[in-house]
Length: 265
Ligand SMILES: Cc1cc2nc3c(=O)[nH]c(=O)nc-3n(C[C@H](O)[C@H](O)[C@H](O)COP(=O)(O)OP(=O)(O)OC[C@H]3O[C@@H](n4cnc5c(N)ncnc54)[C@H](O)[C@@H]3O)c2cc1C
Image (cartoon, rainbow, N blue to C red):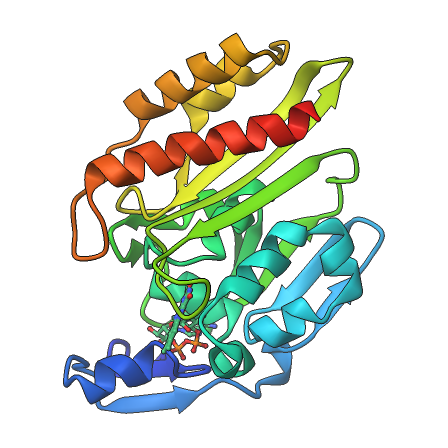
């Protein structure tokens, strides 16, 4: 990849690549399998962080007890991805690098303020995941770089977390809208809130204006209504073959209301 950038394409689980290859939509002719590189494997836990190798599969995420306990949004995303077969092969690194706005793990990773390690012959750099996607299917990943690790800070203990994927079916469906949220509530007041959506913008979207409205506010039906209105102004979903803009907007608002109900309880 260093010597012939844009010629060699990393191949992890192949669950995105094989679809494109079969459809004749892949210009690359050379693939390098990264699936068993030891540096890209394993889930490591320290008191401060959980660090996942980029070649960690969804099945490995789902089966990890500490992730289930502290990072349930990521485990739910893994469980909602494709089928068991896809979960056995598909990797977190592949999902991130593929940069689809309809992918299911990015909303969870954004809520967790994940960090990515990108490696190449030139060295290694850590970046905030929120800065990784720069546009539709575009990212800061250079042609000679690999995503090697994904790091999560273990500071979500006091947060209530909520994940919901809305698709055509309960399984094996691409999202129409995907929601991930986390909030800290003290005495009825929101002291911390993070909200992210998939499938309603060219990249995964952190609902910053809606968060700002909720931050520090006291939970009430009026607040929920105001937040839904703020969200509608903040997002610009599109019509496509899977859904319509108006359906997506309404569902996004409903998922926000569901989240606020959960944290109120
Ligand atoms: C039937 C089916 C159902 C699916 N359902 C869902 C779903 O519900 N939700 C969802 O989000 N996705 C879904 N997908 C898409 C896919 O499974 C995921 O995006 C998966 O995480 C891709 O990982 P992979 O390892 O298979 O990637 P690959 O296909 O191997 O690679 C995908 C892209 O990432 C690059 N890449 C892979 N790993 C790295 C790395 N470490 N560093 C740099 N670049 C890398 C590759 O070069 C390629 O461009 C589905 C796919 C199929 C076939």
